[in-house]
Image (tube, rainbow, N blue to C red; front, side, top):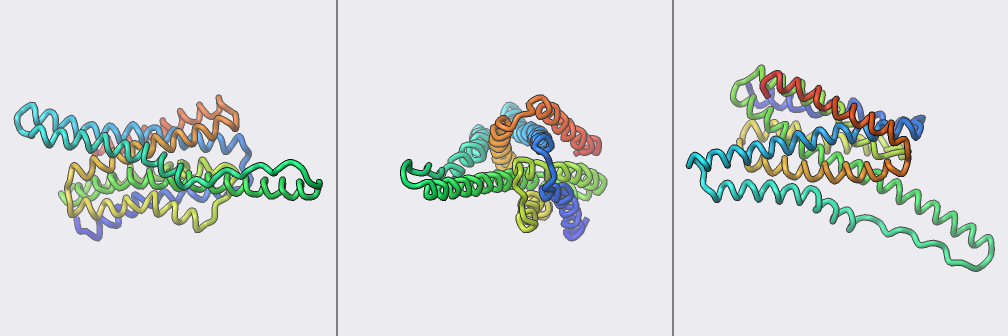
Length: 285
C-alpha cells in the first residue's frame, strides 16, 4: 500500500471525531441531558484508559519475557519500565501542575460597605467574572481531553501505518473501521464537560484537529518508522492524561446531580468502547 493511501486511511479513521463534536453547539440541552452526555464520555474515556495501559504493559511484559530468555538486556527492560512510569506521570501529574499554573485566580469578593449602587455594580462584575472563569475552565478542560485523545490516537495511527507498510491491507482496513468508530464516540468526551458552555465553530474545529488529526499524522509516521519506545511513550502519556481528565469531569458532574443516571451512562459509554474495539480485535488488530 502506498503512503498516499495510508494517509487517506489515517484521515478517515481520525476525522470521524467531527461526527459528534457538533452536538456541543446545541443550546437546548437540559442539565440532565448534559450530565448524561458527560458521563457517557467518562465511560468512553475509562475504556480508553484501560485500553492504552494494556497496550503499554504488553510492550514492557514482552521485554521482560525476552530478558528472561536472554534475548533482551536488563538496561532495555529498565528503560521501557521507566518510560512507562515517567510518561504516565507526565500525563497525569504534569497536567495537574500545568493546570494549576494557567488557572486564573478566583475573583475576590466585593468589599463590604459603601452605597447600594456600588455594591450592586461590584456584585454584577463578580458574577460576570465568575461566569467567564467557568467558561474558561470548561473550554480548557475540553481541550485537555482533546489533547489526551490525540496522544492516544497517534498511537492508533502508528498501528495503521505499520500494518499498511507491511502490506496487510485487510488488517489496515479493519483497524481503520474500528478506530473510526472509536473516534466517533470520542467527540462526546471532548464536549461532555462543557456543560452549558456553547463553544464556537472555530473551537470545535481546533478540538477536532487536536483530537483526530494525530491519527492521520501517526499513520504517516508509522509507515516510515517502527519504534516500540515511541509507541510506549505515547501510550503512557495518554493513559496519565486520560485519568486526569476523568477526575476533572467526574468532580464537575458530582456537583450537578443525577448520580444514578450518570453511572448508568458511564457504564453505557464503557460498553460502547468495548464494542467498537471488538471490531479491531476481530480483524486481528
